[in-house]
Length: 231
Image (cartoon, rainbow, N blue to C red):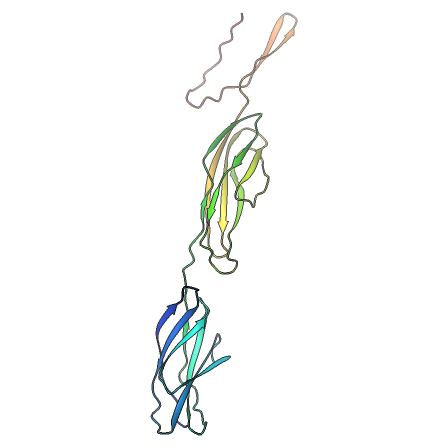
């Protein structure tokens, strides 16, 4: 079997519902009269064929049971009636593809307002993913503080839903990150932490009165001063 095959054509790629890939192969025929059949060699590294299949005397074959999203290298040989085998054909390669990984979807939940002394909020978020890539096959989440005047303590910064506690009043922005190992997505939520509602505290010092109170944080009005009255 002196003649070496010179061409092999990858014509189509198919996928089963279970996710295994198929490659349809076609190659040039060997024209020697003592031709008996062909063997397909394939592997995941160039010229390192760990698998072979005797397909008989045919020039088309469906190579099935392949893994998705893997690069395969393929060559064909011919053999005659006495068992002599040709050299390899030209090598071809193909990525078996598969479903396309898309980023996770992250929703950090609605903006919230809280008034001290209540200094915590429950963050009710939502994360969805397509389960790709196969490894890890799951999405991880993390919460972080983007801005704010004080420090924030998350009960569990890696949980989708968690509780955040604040050290002082102000406006805080949190970011939720969802990562599937290849792609990630983020979403942000704003939390307004108000000072305690104004409460007058009185004291006396030699006929005078000392007044202290919390300033107004009413967002709809501009505050220019305060009017004190006695009853």
